[in-house]
Image 1 (cartoon, rainbow, N blue to C red):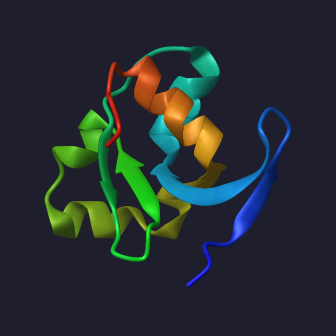
Image 2: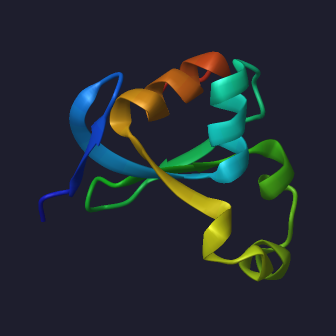
Length: 88
């Protein structure tokens, strides 16, 4: 499976990743918010902030699709670095 790509104004064409909107906001502000990440068997990266990680699955699901945004892999890596996370 080829991971779809997105075009980023900073990083150019990159694989898409999924993060909660709080990580996107924190990245724009340059402030860490927590970074709980995983990578699917297909190679798709995703991450949520500390606040989202502290929710139950039911509470998180209730936030709906508007709580998740797409960022390029470069921005995903930038958010990880901002939170002092080393990706495998």
